[in-house]
Image (cartoon, rainbow, N blue to C red; front, side):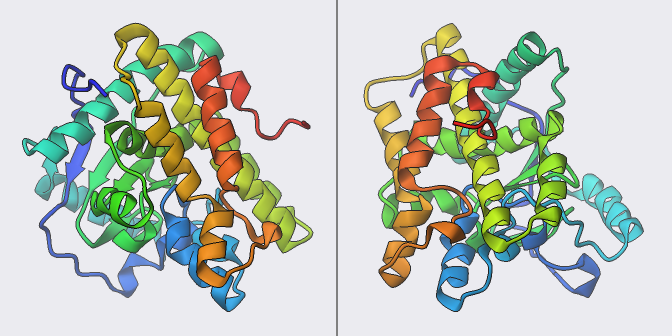
Length: 303
């Protein structure tokens, strides 16, 4: 993937190397915010093994506000804006993240306006080590990258990239870009008003399986939107190289619910899926790549 000439985003909050002091004032766990691509790897497996509803652990598209008081979070936000490093980091990994985020911003500024007549609002991406806090509660590296709609920020511990390569057979620049772009996909869903609609529908769901099915649809849509970004960006810049798409597909396959469930306990329980099967994730990523259209990502349509 040729990414070096991308414009770097300045919407980066670099918390790496900072010591995190969590506590009751942080107001709960990230599991009650919107959880993204990597969360299923740890919390999902715990749910499958213990019988706890994975939707309650990893949330899917749930937008429950788990903060114990908006004022305390607002005060903390005002404080950290003065202390966290803002803007594109200077280290190689930070530069990569900033450039992928910047290319997402450029593409979505155009695509969202042209296809939906909506002006794109850029989220902030928070880079952290180990654990930090978010508008949805505590963030931990084991949860993987996620998007929090409460503060409209993407949270990324880049050790997840290492885990992708060493534990799940993924890896490569475009695969890492796919991870970031999947979380941006959730931000696009938020701007389209879809996340709130899904949250309300999950609250009305008659069963665990029905709530989980809604989570799967929102995650697959984010996979598709990641493909839409890549399709439109590549049409303009020709940044994809031989093997890039295959690497992203391998990553999507590696983190499908079915593969993770089989690895965890040897059986697959489709009703407990929250992110979709390997085949589904690949299918929807490719839909976005092939079409470049938001409308092609309607996972809620009857098919």
